[in-house]
Image 1 (tube, rainbow, N blue to C red):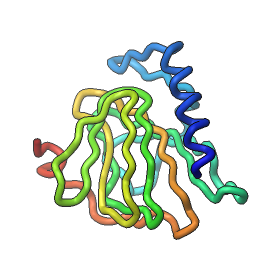
Image 2 (image 1 turned 120 degrees about the vertical axis):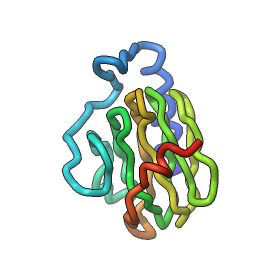
Image 3 (image 1 turned 180 degrees about the vertical axis):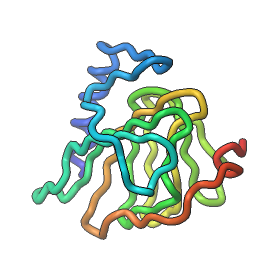
Image 4 (image 1 turned 180 degrees about the horizontal axis):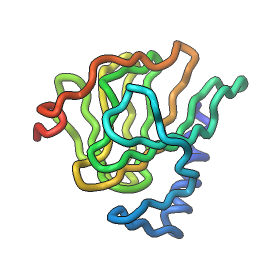
Length: 154
């Protein structure tokens, strides 16, 4: 995972110098938008393009995730932690018991192992992230949905 993060950051920096996004109509991204997520681990409309699924060498999951305005994950945790690279839009990130953070293009979140958290788009903007997760200690553990009260709390 240590080797893949600098490479991803380099690609994202180069891309951010060349692309422009209009979140009122549609977002553009260095990576494909992917497929609409149809499971119940999200509220709202979310798109996912896996970039490093089933990597036997590094055992690292890398996904480009596009959240439409108001969309978000459930509360969840990653046994080995997670890195979130914000590539566009405005989003939120919150760890259990902590205040919600506002995220913007270029922000990097390092979520420690086994910390309950959620992330997603703000109320009026798309949010695009690259999520990097080491799968050596197990896959994501999905918990309860983020309530409307939790989502809207300052």
